Length: 112
Length: 108
Image 1 (tube, rainbow over the protein chains, first blue to last red):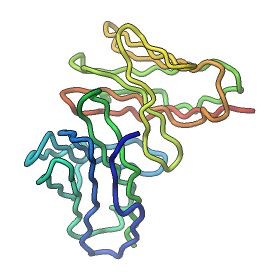
Image 2: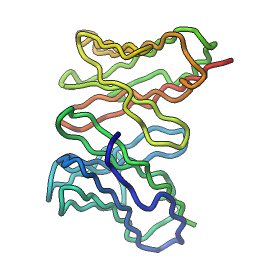
Image 3: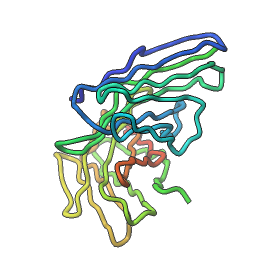
Image 4: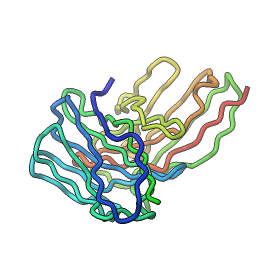
């Protein structure tokens, strides 16, 4: 079982608020990822990191930003939430020994 | 053309039947390959990695064909609990790219 955690699990927030979605893993994995997924739709990679102080934008343009100050922690921030940001956000990590990617339980965000 | 393509289904299959999914990838530099299972409103869970020699885990068998750039998943003796969306994923330089997934419904 993967040791990757996300908080909050559910968030309902008003338009214009700043939010930070937390993701942490205790496996010492260098590589971490954020995906966005609408119900019944495909996973879209929005951000990834190959290590501390490394962040890259994914294939889907996103207004969110990320930081990677510590190996175990990869938070995602939305400066001003909008209803179009309503979605599920999934964090994942990858690393030794098996180089397989594991997902956290996700944060289901609703912006009203 | 998407980098990873799957038939979205749905596949409606009677319990006990064998079902097979294929997935094609376009980038020959892809290094490793995976099948994930995703239940409704849950996170994807790794089902199995896919190796060139093929690998089996109980009722599940995965195969990789690098020459034709496709991977497959075979489920034997399907159970009601196998109903889910099955996602194919490829690792290219540690960037994991997913297909859209194939929905499977096992019918009683």
